[in-house]
Amino acid sequence: MIKKISTAFLILVVIGLALNFTFKNSGDRKTQLYPQTVITGFEQSTSTGGQVVNADANNFDPIVYSDSVVSYTDVRTGPETIYDLQSNGVPQQIWQDPNTPQNIHAVYTVNLTPTWPAADRRVYYMFSSDYGATWTDYGPNPTTGTNGFGFVSGLSDGSAIIGGHTDFGSAPTRLQVFADVAPGAGTFTTLDPGSNPFNSLQNIWGRIQPTSSLTNPTKFVIMGSINTTSADTVASYNRGLSVTTSSFSGYVRDMNIGNAEVYSFARGSDGRIGLVYVANDNVNLSNTGKAYYTYSTDDGATWTAPLLIWNPPVYLDGLYGVMRGISITYVGTTPKVAFELVGVTTTGTYYPSGKAGIGFWSPDVNGGNAVETPFDSTWSNNGNGGATDVMASISRPSISRSNDGQVLMMAFLVSRSDTDAIGSHYYDVYLTTSSNGGSNWKFPPTRLTNNSGPLRDNRFVSLSPTNDKTGGYYYANLVYQQDSVAGSVTQTPPAAESLAKQRFIRAKLDNVIGINQVSNEVPFKFNLEQNYPNPFNPVTKIRFSVPKSANITLEVFDVTGKLIATLARNEAVTPGVKEVEFNAVNLPSGVYFYSIKSGSYSETKKMVLIK
Image (cartoon, rainbow, N blue to C red; front, side):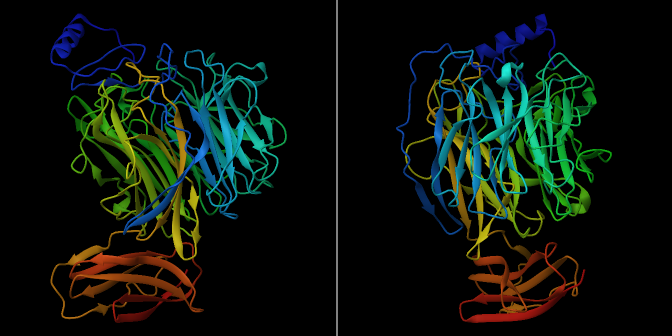
């Protein structure tokens, strides 16, 4: 919300300057109270141009890292950019084909012009056919015109479908989609949904969800929004009816959905399409900080009544609510939603250095009531300042799952105490996992960046919606942006110009969840108890006793001896009674065996899944 600046407010600004508070100018106003910072969709460079500083060498050598929790390879996908604002929310920049997992697709917004307007801002498409070890950079798509804020997903035949907001075809800059003619071909067909019928402003900031099959009448669903804080309707969705020609059902507006990429799609195992979003508070101030979930069982033609999943409590003179970062995945037909939490106000400001954390919601966790995860300011509280990029100190969670649904993965951003000359904080990418549907998350999470080499700023992390299990190991596949300078050139004060790069991480998950402690009483010996309930559908609990500190492995097998799930792999545990939850939502009915090993001790028991 944009309000007039009062005389009293200007007095507060002067006091704030005297006290050395950090401010951010969004292009429309300055604020200070905690200090607060304005929330805006401003995406133009505020830099005046000039020499590019702190440019990294064009180093394509991979970074290899390993510890007791995760091991990964980190490589560049190819392009680099001066314009470095990749997203206003959680990016959608990577897609691994679940049917051909060695095929991974990525997009990245690139602009090498130091000054605005950015005549060469484009969305680049990259493809890997070897699990991300090497990448082919196909360059910008479309090859002419401007394009920004790219997104990518995949069709049922394995072809990429990408988009952004572009003026391609002499159109006013607006959301357009491009479908590849074959997996990894890099030859795209333009799919233009047309202009926004509800407002003179065009829909930009796209998100996309393909349907379950290209044989369906609807091939994909898109959502876009307009760049304003004064309209009561800012977001609209549309259904793509073809991937070979521009055929759409027409935009449908939703007055409850906010703008600036505060929405996320996912698809369930039965083909349903889920949507989560931050509520539009432009006119209805009671929507501030709220998040909603809805879904469609007819490929986006109709949607269920929105379900409020986060109702923000009071925080200082505002609310502890959802600001920008929100994302969704499905385990079977059960939604799993992650969202950022930060102090926000009904006047359009937030507290970048105040309380922050990650929230989680699923109807089968905590009685369907959203929870605050351990990833909050009591764990890390470095704040944020300078070029804030409208981020909290813990923000932008990207949630996804393994192909078999056994493991949830969540990557998010955490500020460091390191700052630059204007007070901008450097950020790191963290990764955590859960193998019990989000009831518990591995804590502390694993830091994936700044584990070696010079200090770098790492933002805009995006996990593939689904991730492979190969050679008995689960993997997380993600991209993020790395820069030698903290913050974005779109901010005021702007970050110094530099060459930011997209990097890809393929992380092998050695342990996927922390084991729940049931009792601290030290047992006499190792013991594996019978799962309960048994028979079960689809969730059961496995309890075991550990008499001394040890490393344990807990696995599930089918009747043929095939490894179905690894609940813990060589995980260090303390003495006591422990418990792990096993979710068989994607498994058929039948007899399964679970086995525990620790040193010379091993034990196996039988359980029955009945659906």
